[in-house]
Length: 281
Ligand code: ATP
Image 1 (cartoon, protein in one colour):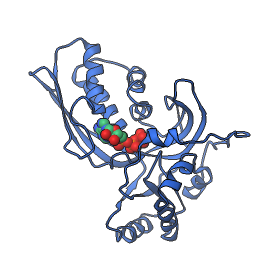
Image 2: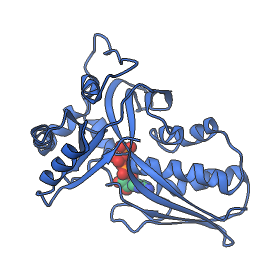
Image 3: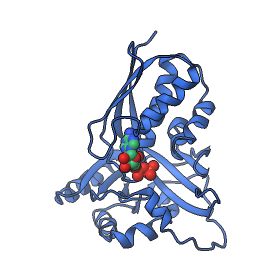
């Protein structure tokens, strides 16, 4: 039996985020286009003879024990397996925290997928997604592992195969933004009808036609630097730019690696910002 597994847990960006309605339980019905990118946390999961779950992350702002969403994933699977196994989880955090990039949800999904293997549980992807949505609304997407249209609170996933690959420049102004705070401050406006999402896109520039994020209306007024970064990405040659999730990370889409790298270098001159040049996966 395998004793240890190392998984790359990718971040995501939202090409689109429409907030449809607030449900009585406080969650929001959404419609999102979700795209994984190759900025990854490294999650090492090991079985141990000592019972209990231990999570080591060592990143400021990320809890090491029960508060870590990766711990919750391990607990859910151990409870289901009814096995008194011990689990050690080490997370090397490369994805900025509370940044709109889904890092915690991706770590959580990696533990569900990895522990399912290690413990030989044989749970299907659908079963893991059902367990995942109870831990976080973005977790099913990272278990699904495909570019998706996500509806409901994020758990109803349909694959989107028509999106071309793109170079992505990420810029995070290093201001942690609480997702709960953003949704609490969102003023929902009545929409006539939702914009149609095409089945296929000719090139990266065509993706720009669908880019929109309702949460910008809350986060940008509180952190105007987000608008400044969006403008800067366009000035550096991005086809288009948008805030991801609840922010504050902004991404620019590029159709050429050289332009993306040059833009990344230009934006790195601001030392307070985290900048990464990555690809869609
Ligand atoms: P989303 O876009 O899904 O809202 P996010 O990128 O804005 O996610 P995360 O980085 O996933 O936010 O983390 C949000 C909060 O969750 C953090 O403030 C942190 O304290 C807590 N947390 C718990 N476990 C983790 C983890 N493994 N990685 C990051 N944050 C975690």
